Length: 368
Image 1 (cartoon, rainbow, N blue to C red):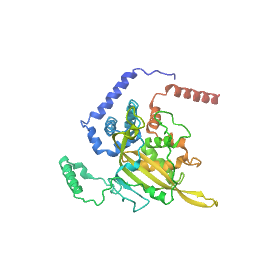
Image 2: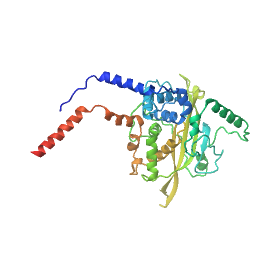
Image 3: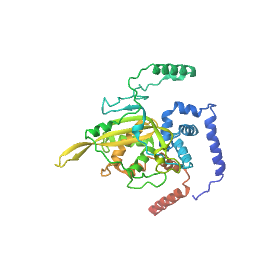
Image 4: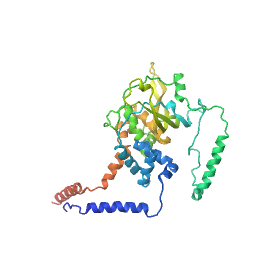
């Protein structure tokens, strides 16, 4: 069987796209972008994190366009991101300046500033809520007003806007090493190819852009046995970070008077990982290392898994795959992995016919 050229490809593609539009519209229902932003916060946050583009509005639009497909929405956002000019680089953000709305520690019951549960599904029963079938806008508005009145009546004894880091108190006890600030310019993996061995700045970028399920799965694999890393979450923070840029055409003097351009919501995790080391007497000692994770929005599970992999990749001498940076970093990207798997749907007529001819030739020689 010879190679047969496909005819009428353009018309077929146009018909396929028209059919896609029909499938989206045939039920005569429309979901507004603002509705997605208001009711699908977790999905919006994941799309922003994996596409490395902070825009809840554009993320919601991409979700609508992709009909809820995470992979397609991220692909759309990455494609749009590639068309945007890079006007400025923001200044380094210190996470101590985060305006915290949620802050917990699995390591200590009592932490300076206290634990702040915030909004989370961690304490819900995960049972289907059939009352959502009968939601009414007016009813919801009344509930919101009642809740806001309840908040207004709360008398706070101490108003704390910024919380200290838990790990800093352990450093004061000498339980964690203190390092000098490293002002080395980070590698920007959106501007240059990912180098191997990868510096930590590049690894963290890939991890925070990684597909949420893939990062979580590899973090789980490390916990379950492929490395047997079992950290304790020192601190999870969810809140807003201010973003500043230097004044255009500014001098060193203007660097001290930057422009505030807005804030981004992030999830940040510092995990405490026990490791066994040898002291000067060649005796085994237990020490702790820190695994770090941060990503856009309230995306705590991914940030925790990221912190596990961050610590794993600091120890490439291990034989476990979760410690192999090429294995981890080259396989967690949503666009790369989805694109490569999806390309298998595209025509492979010539290469497959070549393989068929080879098999036929071998079979023919075997019969002679």
